[in-house]
Amino acid sequence: DPDLAIGTAKELVESCCKTILAQCSVDIPNKANLPKLTKLAVKQLALTPDDIPDKAKAAETIKRLLSNLATITQGVAELRNHYGTGHGKGAGTKGLSPRHAKLAVGAASTLAGFLIETHQHKSGSKTP
Image 1 (cartoon, rainbow, N blue to C red):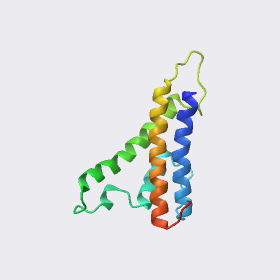
Image 2: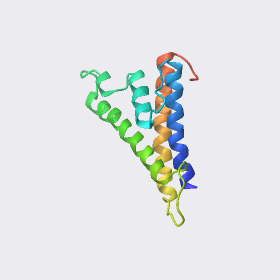
Image 3: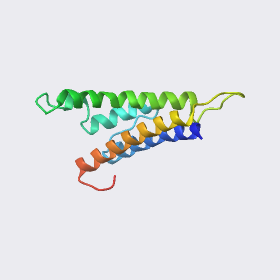
C-alpha cells in the first residue's frame, strides 16, 4: 500500500525527532510540522552545516549532505500531504506507484537511522 508506506515514512521521521528532542529536554512547539521538528533535532545534534569546521576533511561535501537533510524532510512531508495516509481522498484519486513509496521509505528510514545513531553517539547510550 504505497499511500500507507508514505504516511508511515513521515511518521517515522516525526517520531524520531520528537523522541530526540524530548530526551534532550527541548520544548516541542505544539504545531511544529515535520521540517520544523527536523530542524530542531538537527540543531540539537549539532548537524547543521555551520557545525562542521571548514578545516574538516571533506567539509564541503559533509555540509552539502547535511543541507540535504532538510530537502529530504520537506520532500517526505509533501509526498505524505499529497499521497500518503492522513487526509481523505476523493473517488478516483490516483496514488503513486510502489517504487515511489520505496523511495520515500528509504529516504525517511536512512534519515531517521542517522539521527538516532548520532543522538546515541552524542549521549553515549545504545538506545534513545
